[in-house]
Image 1 (cartoon, rainbow, N blue to C red):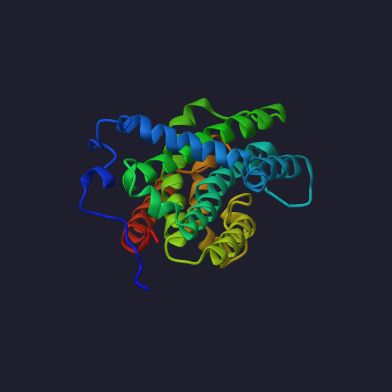
Image 2 (cartoon, helix red, strand yellow):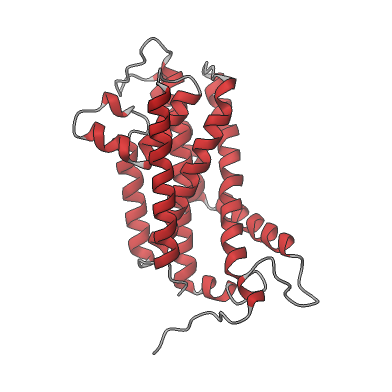
Length: 273
């Protein structure tokens, strides 16, 4: 049986900004409605809620209060080093793991193919997913930041713009990786692989333990991964590390490189059915 592809001739079905008939809602409303649905679905899913909210908070409390993991602080408080790393972990959880799993099962069940033929279109569906990721990340920042402040975290307000830039690039890179996996692999394989990658990056990806405190060759590898680069940018921006301008620029370049490369790969290889 040949694979059924969504129609591509009708611009209204592929461009969220194009008119979609007299009874269709405006493009912005369609995208926002989809984003709201995606956000609500994620927050109602117990397994995903555990991944994006409960586990990061538990890791934050455990690493900031316990001594199970040795972390050098170079004179800073432990929470100042741990909190930015946990924020990076939260971005990774939402933009990568959750999106990879949900998109893969939507693709297997035919939801992606169906939605691509509605007035929402492919572009609107992807825009809704991106907005949902950003909405959940905003909630994560409020939750994790609030807990960290209660634990004594004192971030540098001047670094907030740099932190926002890092989170934006990290979100783009990890979302592109999620779509690349979800659009090329079987759903069951994505479920296993995404969770495994999450654990590996948590342990050896430079997220909670700065790359410079890891043994070689893990230290060099972690610094070149999007997880380690994002965590380094957040630690530098929010006062968790004494990082030079050159090192920050290097971490941003790593993030940007991953974001561009993975986005191009996802655009080239993603399959809707």
